[in-house]
Image 1 (spheres, rainbow over the protein chains, first blue to last red):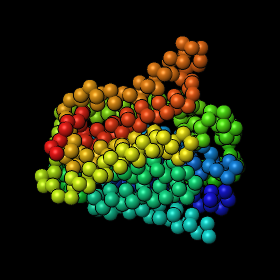
Image 2 (image 1 turned 60 degrees about the vertical axis):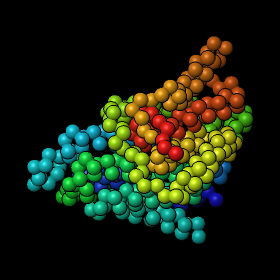
Image 3 (image 1 turned 90 degrees about the vertical axis):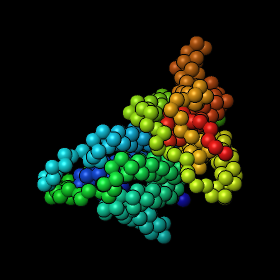
Image 4 (image 1 turned 180 degrees about the vertical axis):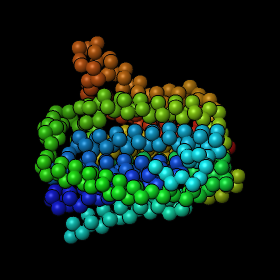
Length: 110
Length: 310
């Protein structure tokens, strides 16, 4: 059941790398804060995947310690999302903007 | 054949990540993100971890998706002129940076896969130490016994997030999950069947967690889903003040873990020692209630609950 072979571990590592890259690309380019938050979440998922896959299996089952760490990470991530969304809603309430940039326009980002 | 399945799932993850983050329609992106979370859950199952699959489906996709969706509608109400994503920045560096970072992640991962080989030393120690605890689920063993300081602090983080959200949003919570104006005839009947079943599933996950896949986090997330359902159908109303029951439920997980852990000092045990499997059940039950209530209130953006109209 478990992918014990090096071949499938390589596939999952490459998937984590690709998903991380996609998330970072979107994080740099997106202006809407909600989308930037989703990009950070996607990058986090990639890190979780890497953490579990890189530990490798023990006796045919996955290593329990990184799995417990990731389970903790999933709950901490949802707490962080709840807080970030509250910040975002408050920002929009106060400034009327959903982006961290000034609405001057014309700048091409960093 | 196995490799084909892995490649298919890995490709699906990458494509869904792209679809959720690219394109002008933000709402579509959020829906795609939830789908990404579900495929992630399938990927965990494929990798052999039912615990992570359940947690990802319930928390990573379900609760997170509900939180983001609610924030999206709230933002639309505040700033209706910008419902869609403003045009993305133009940056020539972005693609380069992203590709280089992905390369670094791949290099780290491939090096780790080959360097550690089959199982780390700590993982081996876990397999050897687990039978003495009487638990069958290694993840519950790590969370509640071997590394339980992490878990105490994690429940505390959840509580801190609730308090931070309250501090930020103040009394504005009532504008969020307003009761539906029109109610279908089937909704009431459906809720009265689904809500008790959800609680039953949560209790089962809690009970199973010490031996089989399951545990406080998955059970708490299922409870939170029940709370979200009750908020959406108007059975529960967001309240500005948290009543004594809600306050007790919010701190129950941290308190039970902390009090029991400190009490062990007085009987000559180390801090946070776990005296037996009854304590595992007790702590997991307390955490389940706290996680469920906190996540449901985070969704409603409310301090507490009041009874809704029946």
